[in-house]
Image (cartoon, rainbow, N blue to C red; front, top):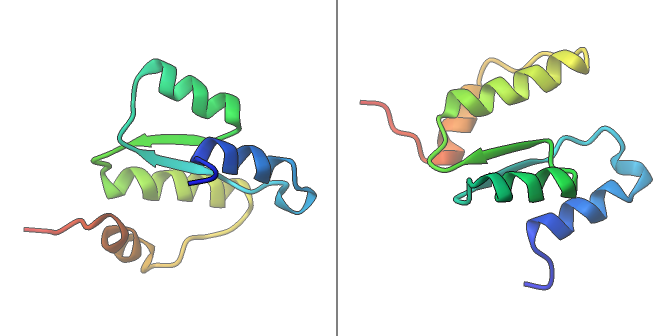
Length: 88
């Protein structure tokens, strides 16, 4: 790829239209150095695989709350589908 996730985030942060945009890294890399690189690039949340869908929902809910929004009732189902979470 021409850009990695850190580069993409830095590019987004430089755009006026992206002000207030929340960026979440969902990655297999979870060392302190990896988390520091994500923070330095402007990534808001660094989640390490395998991620619990509830953790994603919590991050989204906290951002929505700060923005004065509410999550849709089916958000949990969408998150579960996105991360391949299966019940039972």
